[in-house]
Length: 54
Image (cartoon, rainbow, N blue to C red; front, side, top):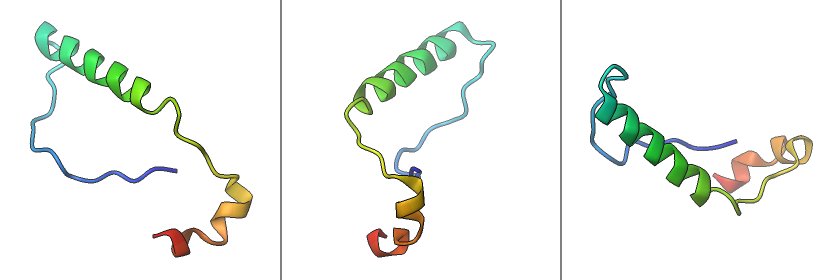
């Protein structure tokens, strides 16, 4: 489960553009590294009480 927010203004990447492709790959790598230690919930236990967390 995750939450996505519009926090950064930007534009859609053009995958035909090598520079855009490089930037997308670098951003995805940073996102992957940043999420390494994020825990997770047991889905069955979490579904009944998710509204309390949000």
